[in-house]
Length: 443
Ligand code: FAD
Ligand code: NA7
Image (cartoon, rainbow, N blue to C red; front, side):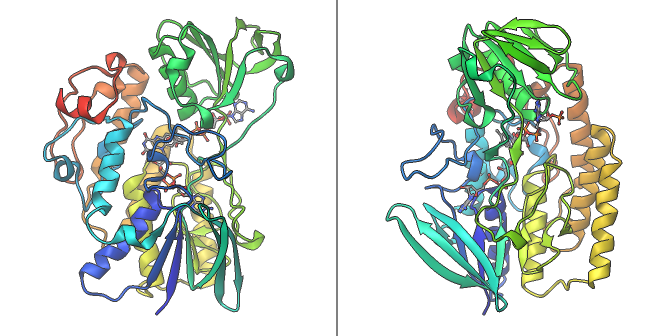
């Protein structure tokens, strides 16, 4: 019987475990599985931690999640095909839940069987090598500070890629009298009440961190984009300007001449794909993009088909795309799907990469990732789910954001699994200060 290692018990690692659980339920013999996670609980980023920097064992904290985070896309776009929101909560719930609600949903699916027994928590994979057709993994039992070793036939890398911050430097940072931090360490917008906040970046983190600061009472929020402005209709107290040129004392001076007094600079400048626990030849090297190179079907490492990566793409689709990848990876491991010849693999990767390079706007990007996910879906027995509806939901969501960035989270969407339409939440997002599950579900 083969033996597989799964590195990470976040949404992707849990999708992998769930995929095997489905086979087991059909009385199929599955490989021995060991899943490693360096945190003390499962759920990856969704398992909120107040910690920043290092944990109690001196290990860098992987978590980038913050308080008051509400889903940034409709939950109907990420719903699991085999475990609907209606099933978990016993009733339809609004489309944009806060973090605790999504965490509860993710865990609800894996909590009933014996998945948890396959996970070694507080265990950090430190090294992975491939020799004589086997992977040798070294891992640290953090609580006892012991390094142990084990060997495996397959390795699934599901360690996430929003944990290691990319931190650029701007002139004047060394002498700036306020606070400079990366969004990776952002935990609570309350901290910035009455402060002048500068947010650098123009993607999801910049958008949401800036909105959070505004919502929780920052005096001003100034977003500095590098290439393209997000261009939303920002509420009172917020503005978007072009690129930080330098800091002079407390003053932030932008390329377009804007000058703004600043108490804090929050770098929402993205993350690095970082795999120090894999030997060089096994490491995926990419920036955050919709189709990272050298991954066949976005999953199988081109140079070694026993190494599989999940969730390494930039993400519109999340949980159900991770599932489609995991079901596909499972069937590769089980020998149910055969890998084609090298030239075909190369051709297929190149086809997707070159299509990705031509994408010009969010609608095209949504189409691209939907087509990718649909193709994977058709290759395994992942249960039925309406990806056409998900595509429509994503596009409608994008248009809602353009209409009004403050109110897009108040909209309702239909489920691609049950068809039920989400109820409108009792409190508009911009007024909902309490993000607890209790308040969200019960008020
Ligand atoms: P993660 O959730 O990062 O889990 C990876 C796991 O691997 C972690 O538990 C970590 O401890 C473990 N690990 C890492 N290295 C090692 C090692 N060496 N040894 C052992 N274990 C290791 N997606 C949405 O759909 N909706 C949202 O609203 C949304 N909001 C987001 C907000 C933020 C701030 C961020 C950063 C991301 C957000 N995402 C959102 C996207 C997010 O990437 C996915 O939802 C999801 O968490 C990805 O799952 P993952 O399993 O790939 O990675
Ligand atoms: P992303 O989506 O990878 O975006 C990174 C952003 O950082 C992007 O807007 C970049 O701008 C910007 N960037 C990078 N370097 C710089 C410098 N030097 N100066 C200014 N801006 C810079 O990461 P996010 O953290 O926003 O999102 C990650 C996940 O978190 C996402 O999936 C969400 O669900 C939540 P560019 O466009 O290259 O000019």
